[in-house]
Length: 333
Image 1: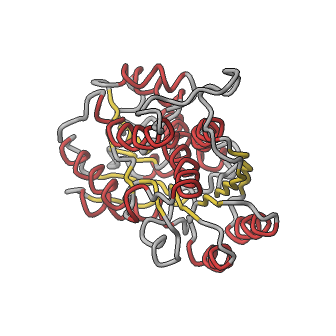
Image 2 (image 1 turned 45 degrees about the horizontal axis):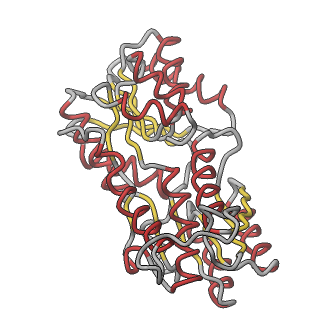
């Protein structure tokens, strides 16, 4: 499988972000950006202020969501948006947060749909109230049927299939796919895709990311029990880094690969502790979720025209890690 070079991981996001920025910048001045009277608001959209709620299924301590939030905050600062971020890993509680946003009469809602069935009633109440809703990160298979306006993320099945094909190319024979939140549709789709795309045997291991010591001990025990496992694929950077420790504890020779990145994961790729990662660009997902609502509220636009906007997958490995490392260490990749 051909690895994308520096332009690869950022190409989709660059197109979408440029499109959004172009709408913000163009005006009746012949395409030149408007400048404020005193220059104090340079770089901030000259549109009415609005309030957008972003509600995710973040597990506390998972650095993935720091990247999402930074992207959302960057778009909000540019777009004259008050961003209200909240999260709960339990779907009923996340749905309650959506209802609270509705009750506070926000202008738009951006939400993750890790467990669509539990979230559907709250989303329906929001749309019935005339509040535009966009989804990102999770819910690729469900968002449109739920009446959600736009979706930003990756097709997790396709991403999993790409990972499985890469594992085959790498010579893997038996892979352990670790799901850190049982029942989360995106994670289940990833491992299903790996199974479909991989030419060897895939075994699924469920762990609880709310208890990282138990994650480490569970992976360690599995690697000790089955030395034929030659590759471990994690579905999040913290799980991958924990798997590196479990591998060492177990005396295993398994290769660790993963979905998603953070600064420590970039270091692990550079050191060779992790062979590669699939990047879905969480910063971009947060950015586009907020920016898309601003575009809709102010100009009736929908990015992608009602079709999902894909932010991944792209492979990051030793051949292109230098192109990403700077941004990862700045906390945006």
